Image (tube, rainbow, N blue to C red; front, top):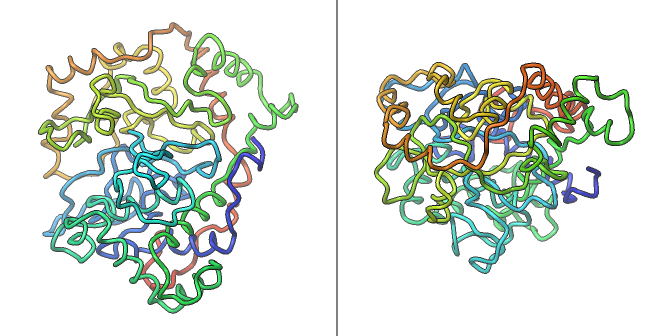
Length: 416
């Protein structure tokens, strides 16, 4: 990778996006920010298998679910992905099921859950992605009747974005910053959700660009950047272990969808008419049976920091997810629910492992496999782990360009 592989984002917009990313003003009940589930101290994730969005308190493994009338109604159905290198030019598909992609499906440049109602003016795939957690009931919007954002969403998905935009632009400091950061904005009243999204995208792309790992140094010709076990791991990754058949190219992802047979649990995501508690993966977007239980290949730089692993965070360690790739059916036999990092929520526990205990559904999932068993020794698995740890960057991890702000213009508390 080089700087030329990334979209050039504006730093003034990024500085504005930094404040928005940490500001709970963008949530329906003003109680959760983007950073709550994608925090830099937690590898830009939350270190949970399935997180608690709107209605929780605290960060990461310490996050708790409220138990009063405001308690959460549902766990977040999928693992919070890391935010590394999302400004890459070649990136064309996002979300575990790929429900957002660059396409002309609706004549607006994107195939997205908003379909033809996607706002105009979004300058990148990352900007388009940024607006969807804001209108997700269990992530940031909240439940119906709790606030005007959640209520508007149940009218139509695009009804809430103008309300959020007004919420932000009437704060004097934000209004001034938008005028300064965007050439086409002459007064705060012109600010829409598109400018908010573009600022969020600029911040995330600049803040978490990372291609200075030992692996990158090794590719650049520094033979000393990798240890002997990391070099053996590299040979396995691109050879015998067959990892690069999917984790390929500069992105270390083919951006395609594969069924790995990960242990299923949680509420899952499925088609609207499907009453089952399960996650059908790509099929929920494509509506094609052959896409059942397939999920997007993740990029791997800084993967050491972004556990737990899998679309639902089924494995807490790199070794675990590697061994699952090597023999998914055997690993299913030995996996136990204790491996899932799920914040305590007793009223949700009855459905947490419904799928895991459903023999018929488990039998259906076994029919879909895109990987074949590969035998590796314990030493070879250890070498692969060492190689993956060699993908961890240095400068953007230790000292990102912007960092966590001391305060935000709304005056709401910042998760630190």
